[in-house]
Image 1: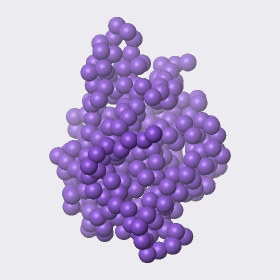
Image 2: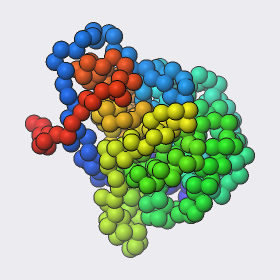
Image 3: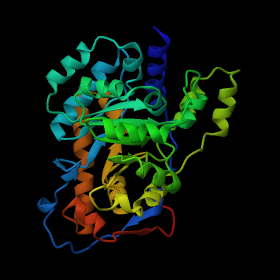
Image 4: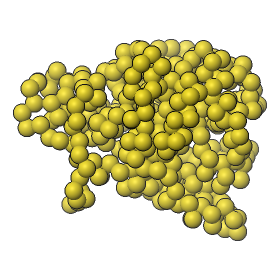
Length: 354
């Protein structure tokens, strides 16, 4: 097994551990949705379809980018793809860095696309690779997937703590602006579990992005994962402990973004996506109430996928039902209505569960 394969398999294995998850950091427990005791609608009137990139899609959910580029990725991606196709979710693939560097035979993706021709797939490359690559190379990655969108992920903390990391981010805004002009598909900027502040968002909006995924602290923490990978005598292991609670919670990241005008209206609107510690359909309803347009699940989808397509399909169905129930109990029949009404407040005391 080469070093790349080993690293990617480490990431999948370690991401399943509760030790690398920032429980409670997302901030969802601080948000109370305002129950409507008399909703003036029937449950079957609740419609969770939404519009992203001027397209009507069946659900407001996507599976966040997780795995690609190693020998175990294809079977897992096929389980994810099959369930996403059944339920109308969008699927993000893991980093295509290896494909960019090694330029392997693309027959695997060709077969994948023949089996799932109608699936909406998002390509994915790291910011440092986007900076150092020509637009034509990134376009080739998107073309190999027939991608619906191309994600450029920023993972500054992980790149510093990862022995194989590439923490070269100088010129990042310029690279994003170039790609938004040159690529034939929408470009999405995504954090990887540490969130984003309003100053960074303001700068990102100037690049012409189609969407930003705030991906806040509260779910899988990649600093903790790299700390778990490090050898006992590696200084990165000690540093990972110091950075184990580093990041901006998902709720705070969404609130930092929602007042920025280009995220809200007009022809140049940049869609606001939310991920990071989203575990239930109720969590997703809180994201929509706070201002998000699209919501992503990562670790819980991976856990379900490892149990097979039927289990994953049932898990997805449950998240959809939870969102529909939350909408009904808020008196909301369409996702767009979240942006038209104030349906949340700060919770006065923490939630306790038996």
